[in-house]
Image (tube, rainbow, N blue to C red; front, side, top):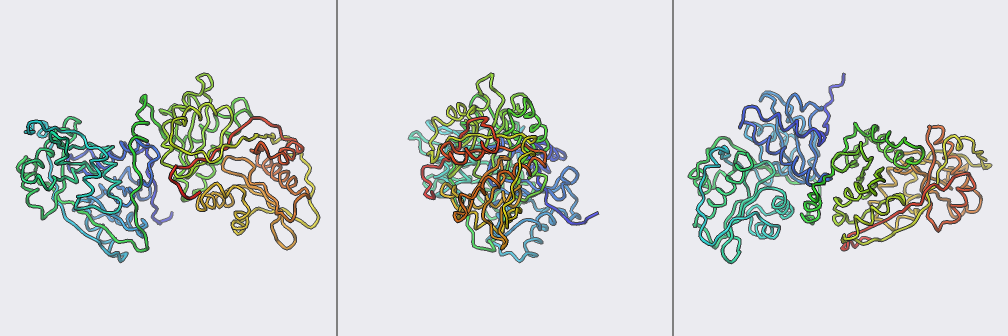
Length: 587
């Protein structure tokens, strides 16, 4: 049995079980409880949240309660293992520290593990700060009385307030504006406003649960406004049946006195440590708009719920019904099952979602994979309303570039979902969907050209294929190049080579399961090599037990004639669409 440690991903559907491990010995493990609970809430608001991943060591989180959570540049960590255990240290050793981490709100009991990793890797520290953990149970917080000045009001912070707070925050850094805007949009917060609606004091709740970025406008110091927003936050959390705690810098004597005066008790120490990147890198403040995500996801109480990978086979098998009517959906899910089983390191980015978890009822899914989104639905009796509602939850404006391909039957859902969205359609192309059953494909005669031979395409041909790829003008180079690289390295392909090993014609099998990217070098056109390549690919897929299908652009009459001459049948009309964000300059 191997003794090699592995970082394993804790899937979102398991986060509630992980969180509940920390209920025991309350409030000893409250930081872990609130950290995991915070990200559960965030994942419900944005099921395809970027740059967030939960890890455990060797998938043993159920027994040792160990996690390391990466949220953009921040690292959160915890373990229930005894202090003599090195499980947390081993897990952190497996992380990539090259971009630097802000190791956030970790308790004194875990400090040795963090320092050991930092020193073992020879990392330079930007800062290493100790904070006092002040705690108040909800029963006491609910009894706190607040004295808000006349004509003043308390309210949740807005994104504009977050921008003001960031501008004067002593901890302001690259990435902090995005952080505070997201905290304002998604977490409890309190601002104190005067009669002129000016923001005088504010308090956020950080990802790990503590009150944070608590500050008073410098023109209004020593008026008790910090205490007012602190009590207001404690009251708000008590109303949510949650305890309240804060992390206060060890040298911040006024704040320590304030919390103690209110009634908080010092119960522990926590630390904040940031390491410098070991290679040139800097996070930037991404655009954040709660209107795109929060408002959309709460509409009509609809939610996108991830379909876990262990359910993908059951999802795929729904599309066996009335074969081959749903062959495309079957092929899409099959492709990602194979990619998932192959253990590709970037496969975690591809996720299937359903509307409100009801995929077994309507066979509706959305698939998010890098810059592509694909979708399908059985919900014809309801005019595909479940697909419409699911598509409306997608933050289309947050994508700088995006591509999708779908059948004509789903056009109505697409049009309804994006009609009012602020996106630019770069390409809206009609296609014909050609299909051939495997029983027919296996009988196609293949004429092997003299002096030429078939072989699989390899990544050494990637640059050659990319430079001749007709679709590269629609995508940025990293997106298009990466897509072709994945298809070549993972999926079936057929290349036609001369005796010198030169590639003269080829086709790939794309992530939808379709025969795609059929091309012949210009020097070898009009020799029938396209027909030979498609014939060989169809026979090969039939040998694997799969039908063959392809999308052919409606005005590509030569390719249409090629597929029809081989015996493919036009089964559906379809659409290929490319969109971009209005301010994307990369097209």
